[in-house]
Length: 215
Image (cartoon, rainbow, N blue to C red; front, side, top):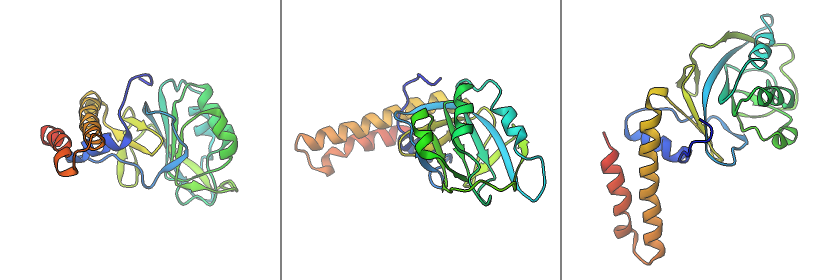
């Protein structure tokens, strides 16, 4: 899955919008360590809660000790944690188990140390302190919400250097094909502009693609 050729997150998001769906996760999530090229992975979901007592993070460590080949680890529910819930150690653990990316609906740290690992990482921002024992795993493997977008286990996440977007597994092939055609329409517009056409003429290529894809 990670080796398939996929269009940009923007193209995928635009196709979903044309089809009346949602899925774009940027904002609120921004690249802390951006994917160098578009990558697709299967969602593995973990829901955190902020409380004075609870399960702690041990269930997350169990997830990061399991087979994560071709997966994107999705951490939800951490936006209100008092500090970062992800950093270098967890990134290295995920990478060693085969994960291809991490989404954290909360804050991360150790970004200069995470970057050389090569794991795409998206979050709400950075904080230097940890969660001070107030972040606990509430559930593993269920549907979670990030920025109003539902992410279910086995949904696909598309990541690139601009952001991330969720695609339902059953839609993946259709969305990727449509986004490739949408991208080609935009490429033709750029080529026409570079050859001297004005936008009112060159835009016909994108309009044709949009008209074809609109449901």
